[in-house]
Image (tube, rainbow, N blue to C red; front, side, top):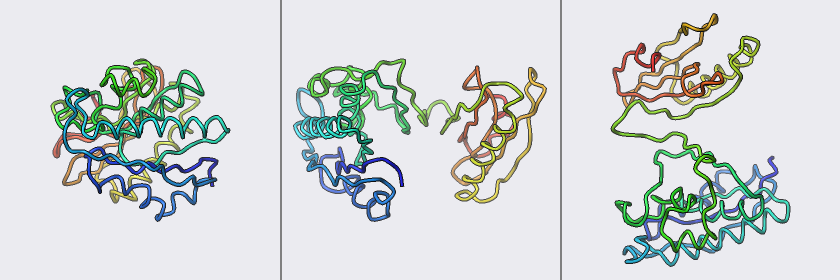
Length: 269
């Protein structure tokens, strides 16, 4: 049991019924809401409309703006009453209204954005017009003006946003997830190793036993770092202890690279 309050937001920015708008109901049926302290039900919101608005460039633009206002109001009410709302979508369109509420109630707020896309498009640069292409641009005050206005202006600063898991198809490898865990000192190695092997055990449950594992040594360190690799038909997945992403600390990163990428290339990124 957690102290979160489950709040469903059944939307899909494609502008028609189906898809991710079934997410809250499905996740509730699988028991996710039971892990929370309370279940506040679902917001009465949907996104409909498969034509791009001529001004905002968004599919179902009126519903996106109405949904954002509803999310902002509901999240504000929950935060003001001392709850910890856990918004369950739905699609990425949830973000701007939720961040607006966090800014309104809590002030300056950091964002860890776990997504395969940066979602920094606007109504002109989005290839689809789907609102899910744009949430970070709206949060930063750079998206369609009407949507930014529905949030009461920008909700986040660039230096407070950390994208995680962004896939750049033109520049593999892809860093799927990076943890900054401990300061780079030998006294933390035992705990750092426990964290690495815990992550590796979790991946093993999904990927099966690793294809390859071992240690690698940085030239400026007296201690070794571990790695484990899973060679799957889709990609080479490699979990690595290192310091390549967070220069002032030891981190664990899961990389996905094209099949056949030599392990040496991974370990010298």
